[in-house]
Amino acid sequence: MKITIIGGGYVGLVTGACFADIGHGVTIIDVDPIKVGMVNEKKAPIFEPGLEPILARTTGKNLHASLSFDSITSSDLTFICVGTPPNDDGSANLSYIESASRSIGTALQNATGFHVVVVKSTVPPGTTETVVLPAVLSSAHKTEDEIGFAMNPEFLREGRAIEDFRQPDRIVIGSNQPYAGDRVAEVYQKFSAPVVRTGLAAAEMIKYTSNAFLATKISFSNEIGNVCKELGIDVNEVMKGVGLDQRIGQQFLNAGAGFGGSCFPKDVSSLAMLAGRAGIDPKILRAVLEVNEYQPYRLVALLEKKAGNLSGKRIAVLGLAFKDNTDDVRDSRAIPVIQELLKKGARVVAFDPMAGPNMKKIFPGIDYAGSAGEALKGADGCLVMTEWPEFGRIDKEFELMAHRIVIEGRRILTWNGAEGICW
Ligand code: UGA
Image (tube, rainbow, N blue to C red; front, side, top):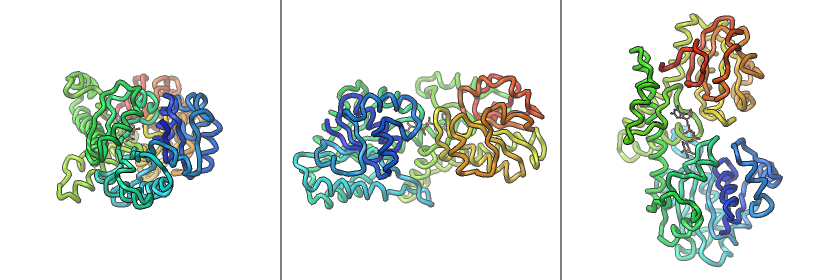
């Protein structure tokens, strides 16, 4: 099928590249000429394992990037994959969704044949029906007989997005009319995952609810972990025993420094906001966010308990990305930790295998080491903030510390001198 993707961010790029890889003809549209140029040169503008080999196979053949909206006119479907960043009040900013919708509508004025506009961005329930649909139809001067609308949420984890795309647990397709949904289902014909067909708003709500539930599992595990720590119980042993109950499941029960990234914090806040507007007090969602906000401070408090007053002390922060396998620092739990350390007068030296340059934009004044060993040399304490597998191999480097006080926010070290945030 001929597909246009609006937005060459992480979702748009992965989706476009993977669609091309299964044989569809794909054009990715982005406003950033640097990004467009990179994709057309088979280079990934973001770090995502496995993406570049796909670009190498498809770019210039059935995958192209462009600054212009021309490809929409001759496409069967257009996927909206633009960002929905948070407003100051926690609600989702839909301005990119609106402008993409108007541009799609304008491009469809001269189109012949049935076209389907598919929202893949994470949007509050009601957005496709009340924002995208009217903006596209009025700009195109067309009716719902000529343009169909669908909502097809993504469930891709950064760092594992290609494998998540190829082996989805389910494919959710919400649509305003069955035929529009059928066309989207055709795109996924080669997948064996169950397809869930719904209305537009239910598909939007499935995405919010999935992220909110996963975030709830994490905050719940963190609260239990905090209790376990006080009682001298290993939370990981507990969660292993709990997670083997198939009704609960083992994933996302890892207690630690809390969830970060561009999705969970934003989506839970946005859902809580939405609940409030609907007259519902979102008690659980508020608690999920509250537990998450507190974990980084708990980590610094544990360090302080062992190291004493942090003023003037050299503290190594290992791990800056919001999780392993990415250079993304958005809402990383390392950010409040570094802020708190600086507030307490500590001298911070940070190391991350990939995310140093991105964190430097937020904290230009702290030291950045080129290796874990360099960060640990002479340090009075260390906080581990990201579950990078390579941190599991750090051993002798801890001997370089002035004082071997190491607190883990993620259970990743194999060195046995560390204390965990919840274990
Ligand atoms: C998340 C969801 O997992 C995806 O399904 C969804 O598509 C995506 O958001 C999105 O909405 O686009 P992502 O934010 O990339 O994906 O990363 P996760 O692997 O879910 O991790 C999020 C955070 O939770 C990380 O900071 C991680 O360290 C933390 N986490 C995860 C825990 O603290 N404990 C766990 O057990 C699992």
